[in-house]
Length: 265
Image (spheres, rainbow, N blue to C red):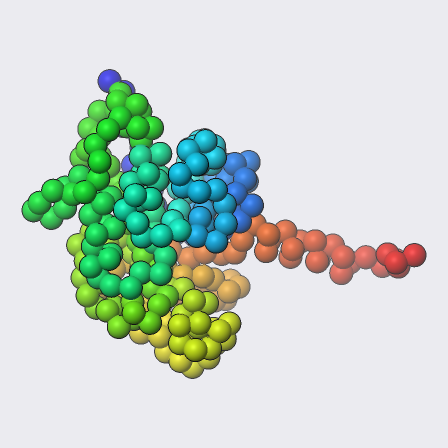
């Protein structure tokens, strides 16, 4: 038998009350995933809802996971659906941090969280037991207890239905965090793209406040470092700093702004 994989540093950080910082790699590039680990980020967000490979594409997913394992960065994988099939598949591949989009009810969240666990509360979980990559193909010690101990499952609060059922969602056992989705909230509240609209900001604050009061870690998007610092001071524990393409655009725009000759000639 061989040792189980190392502990989940992302889960450990937020459970200790710390703030985890990460970047969305919307290039879905193993080299960049590995490099972000070298830079000291806590997590790399892989958003499979809006792009990237299918979580059922084992080859592509394993390449990204191996890159993260190389430098010790934790992948934070947003799945395209709350379907337990996708949750189980991602975890069997070796993902330890998943979060789910567009949840609508506490019952939906409970079903998804239970599908990530072998035991749940005082009863059985709903995760299948086999010998996948996460188990080192059957060679890992302490697999069942270790997976239940290290797996982190969160949800995005971004629909009108989830707002209506917010308190019950926050009460779901083993819910690891809630992530506030202001853009989809703006759509749900009738103000598409207006994330600064008072209705959207009121909803964002309601989610943040309720999560903090319930003792559930809260995550969100950072809009510049002043905003990141303010969010950290107000209880956010998972903060996305930006994206691969956004960072590259900022650098290239800076280069072009410094050009003193006529590029059109």
